[in-house]
Image (cartoon, rainbow over all chains, first blue to last red; front, side):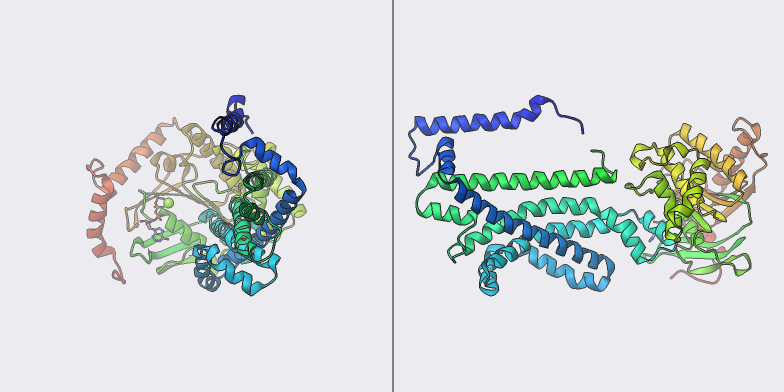
Length: 258
Length: 274
Ligand SMILES: Nc1ncnc2c1ncn2[C@@H]1O[C@H](COP(=O)(O)OP(=O)(O)OP(=O)(O)O)[C@@H](O)[C@H]1O
Ligand SMILES: [Mg+2]
């Protein structure tokens, strides 16, 4: 991969640092009370006051996120393949996938929590519903993405459905699947947090969203910010990690310019 | 080896691509199908390959001997290689689909790649190869099953002039070496005249055979041969006759389409328009 110039790579870091300095400066100069807007130093302080508790909550949220992402990936890919294999399956599945996509998770989360009962499972179900669509839709379009001439070539040599699927359509869908997975990764985290918010008052007190709610009730705004920062960092890491895994896989296979 | 008898093809949308096309291919022929864009050349090639079925007429193969998969090779306008597979793996594909093991295929892969001059590039991925080299891989892939008939659909149209000349010369040498039948679709008069032993000119849509010409050029001729220039001129004349004058403001095609419609009335045979 070609390296960007140093200045370009350093720019976001420098800009972020500048923003933090300005933020801290403004909070101090205008003497903003910490229960309204804490400065970066206060936020770090709040984190250091109870790093174990916050990191444990982060782990709990990430566990929900990754289980949901795995379920969404397997389910999304499997249903996309089923749809690509059979017209009947396509007719049966497609409208429901759209229904799932347009239903706001906040609206059905309480119902799911009541129905499923087990707190962890209900969080996973909610996050899976949010994460499902991108990986499903991308895989489905990837399965149809191979050049029609290649499909003709397979027919010319008498390849059956199975061979066409394993040697042409699945490999052609891989980059699309990986793109979908990356989008779904971010959404799984969002879904997990939303579900935790809804469930929060219901007693499953361990995720980061619950920490945010709890800190809000107690007016520990710095701690609230600390939890928020952890969430964004987790989101960035998931996105970057999945992107990196995707590029690695494609480069291994030899078809990406990276 | 194949006789195409009064074949017609009309697509569901109502487009009539081919009407009443008859053509005989004998073993070892090199036939160029020459015609304007949209006249049904690709459709005819797909019918021969068995990728599509005619609505009328029929294709009769040698003593009813329908070609088995692998007896027909097809080269598309784009190389259409699997981007994730090496050159060698791409050439292996037809054999793999026919159930030949990798070990058994190995010498044939080497041979096919050597024939197109790519033995050094067996392990290269398509994106590492130039357009001309990709097309060579595509030709090797079509030849690896030792087809009786090789169908080529404007294979060199997307290449630059230098590469095209080189590939044309190499294709001729290859054809003389292996002696399979070639049907070569093109809309370049120069290409048809240079390559083919028979040049079949098609009318605009619905495509029919307008005329046919046997090449007077000797084997191994050069592009500088005056006979080549004469042949190009003759084909150009035949084409202008088939299409009408070539300097209509909206291009020759629409005009000729209308003229073709008038001619349809007498050549239309049994079936009327749907
Ligand atoms: N599957 C299809 N369904 C509907 N119409 C089609 C189909 N395939 C081809 N046609 C139409 O049939 C006509 C002939 O198409 P064909 O591709 O055979 O032309 P061609 O001579 O190969 O043209 P070109 O030189 O541009 O490749 C065109 O008008 C095309 O739009
Ligand atoms: Mg064509």
